[in-house]
Image 1 (spheres, rainbow, N blue to C red):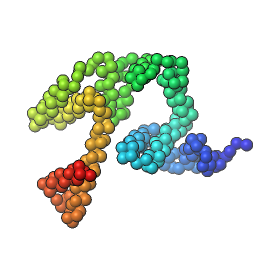
Image 2: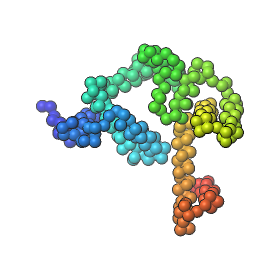
Image 3: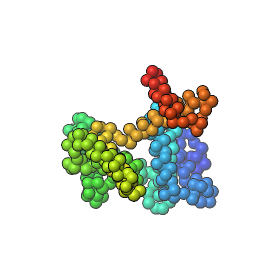
Image 4: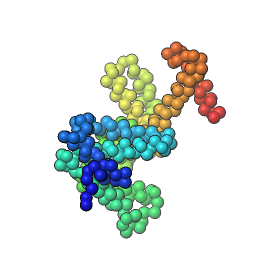
Amino acid sequence: MAKSSDDIVHDPAGGIHRLVEIMARLRDPATGCPWDVEQTFATIAPYTIEEAYEVADAIEREAWDELRGELGDLLFQSVFHARMAEEAGLFSFHDVARGMADKMVARHPHVFGDQTDIDSVDAQSENWEAIKAAERAEKAQHGVLDGVAVGLPALLRAYKLQNRAARVGFDWPDVRPVLDKVAEEAREVAEARDNLSHEELTEEIGDLLFVVANLARHLGVEPEAALRHANAKFTRRFMGVEAKLATRGKRPEDSDLAEMDTLWDAVKADEKRG
């Protein structure tokens, strides 16, 4: 006898089938949640991006207890999008799962097939890129940069665009000319900042950020991860400044730059000693 919807929803061992059923119930136009019912792909997409960043944040902080919940939140986003797609007659969550499983099997012939010449990370990376290139060709994505998602964070997209271009030889031979280009772009911003329109200045700053991303790539650093680390460090240290001000009975708005800069140095010194 098949389980009823209520049985599935309240079954602790229901796994992914339970989650899919819960999403269907939430989206039911007659008995579901009004907020969930009115959502669209476009309105949910920002939450999907946010949840992905919260997963990355939990990993960055090594907050493993939180990570389980954050991964669940991200999984729910996939279930949500798949449910809306199923309602529109596009595909279901099971189609998503089957497609991903098929893709992983196809992209790992050395694990799931009879290919035996993949014996290192470098060989796997080369094979992976060849398979992805063939997949893009099947989708009529023939340009080198086709398939690099426009919706990626800009810094990450810059990194991926540069990687794609480098594969076909459009790249500086080593890091030295990249460093020269960073200095050149920074100098152009400094020299022209008072004479440029806001639009022109935005373009110059964009050029500088783009070449900094390229510098990171040449040094083997993923720029998005590096900036996340810098953000976390700044947050941690500024909170340290706030804590030291609090011991003086003050808040940042009661202080000035000179005092806060001194406390910033003290926080850095504390970190080195710790």
